[in-house]
Amino acid sequence: MTVTTIYVCTTCKTAEDPSPERAGARLMAALAGALGEDGANIRLEGVECLSVCKRPCTVAFGAPGKWTYVYGDFTPDTAPETILAGAALYSATDDGLIPWKQRPDALKKGVIARLPPSVSSPKASEITP
Ligand code: FES
Image (cartoon, rainbow, N blue to C red; front, side):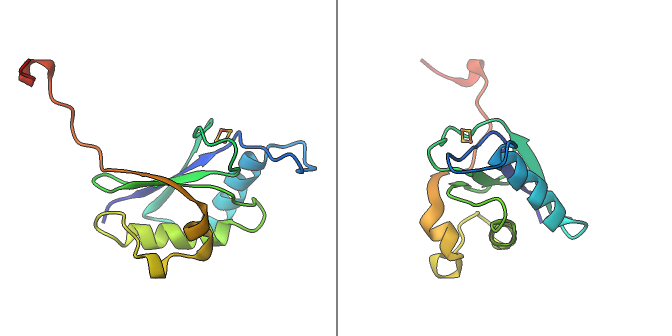
């Protein structure tokens, strides 16, 4: 089984957020706490901006050979359980495509983009003009 990475934007902020700490940083901390020791095949990686700043808080699921999904509209205090449940479903797939009916509602409503699995780039000498 491949390792799933949850990329967490740590710089997301919300207009109504009363905390001086960025909402994205709080989401990252909450996810780390919720993941605990159980996340053997799930890892967290904080990133500065996923370029969907109008949909805070944002995360992405990625793994080698799988589609990458970007999701938004998460609330730091309540979203970790849903995000980790979604990541577990994602991790259980071969291609990253979670069947629609299995997706938590927050992933149905919050989906922003999906990107095809990356492939090795050909070397310049392998490209014919
Ligand atoms: S600051 Fe979070 S997506 Fe840009």
